[in-house]
Amino acid sequence: MRPARFAFGGFTRRLVLVLGLACVAPFGGASAQTKDIVVFAAASLKNALDEVSAAWTKETGKRAVVSYVASNALAKQIEAGAPADLFLSADLDWMDYAAAKGLIKPESRVNLLGNSLVLIAPKGSAVQVELKPGLDLASILGSNRLAMGHVDAVPAGKYGKAALEHLGAWAGVKDRVAQTENVRAALLLVSRGEAPLGIVYKTDAASDPKVAIAATFPEDSHPPIIYPVALTKDSTNPEAAAFLAFLRSDKAKPLFETQGFTLLNKAGSGS
Image (cartoon, rainbow, N blue to C red; front, side, top):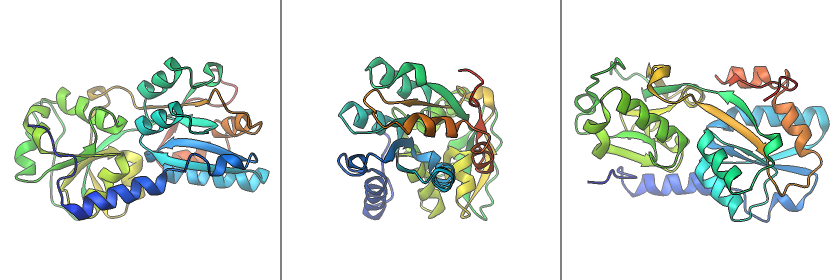
């Protein structure tokens, strides 16, 4: 039995579709304005990168137009010819994919940020979960579903599946997962009370006051959560490299850290 991608009725399907469409910049929009830097970034970066791009604009007068969707969708859009200047992925796999397809400038690639994976519940929930080997998450869920990004494509979903497999819980819940198109859609299901539990990044949980962290997955239960960034091969915007340097700077560092990210690679520290 395949896990339902959206198991909470037509409203949720429409809501997630609207969320995805709202986050994706049309291929021909902002790119026509060469003064704007076009950034394709993982959905989980929205709050932090909004702050960083605003700081960039305040300092330089330049503007970064950011599209937030799941990393897999962004990589495919770049492959299809979408005019992005920078690609910020939520995992190494999709940046590796872009590199293998010749879509990025390899010398510009750095591992920018780190994150943590958490189990969330609606604010005020009395659920108690101890994330350790032998976890029986199925009994905690009861007849409900677990919200998480698509486990075969969305980085947060891939990390989540790996963590549940490590803890011995995946087999019990794999047919009861509400898989979403990006991590913010999984967050929204829990925030709206349509799912009692969800797997998202720590930074996503911090962005929504309607959810609470029920538990944090052990770091050794999943691959390290790394956000690489690179200039795209076809970018001709002279400001793109400067914006990438700003992302790695001491000025951006506290803005990322406030949202729960760890800055892994500062400008001048090598790759």
